[in-house]
Length: 203
Image (tube, rainbow, N blue to C red):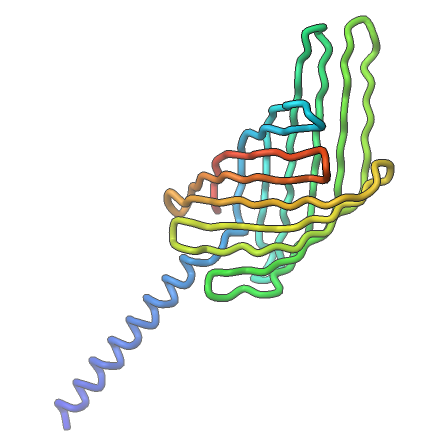
């Protein structure tokens, strides 16, 4: 009887260890919603190539709720010393409608903002901005401990410029638990597309 008790205790310990290990591995494979990103973007804006910076911040408010903001800038200088500067911002509150087995299906909605400034020598700067809203649905999946992908569709509506859609794809390579590299491509309406590449710090 004593031997049987010892065997049962050993089996229970082994099962507990296996369960803990499985939970840890499952936790490792969760898609990321806590990060700060800094990168470069190359934009094709109605046939013009405009390069700039991108800054993203995302944080989980609860296991289901999260906040995510994306800001990008771009500028181009011309031979006549004129310059065009572009910037855009999305700031959304999101909800994970499904979050299991390393995959999260999410929806989000919030603010949309865009600004364009044209600088011409000997003339005052001309600037226009527009504010509206956006709504997004996407899928983010942690395929392995190192590799993660995201695909989403966003609808945005601006006060003056009207409304349109964006389709975005990105891949993320996790170097370790704190840092990752990512590459993404976005199609925005008929006249704009851009490629992003950068590094993220995960917290």
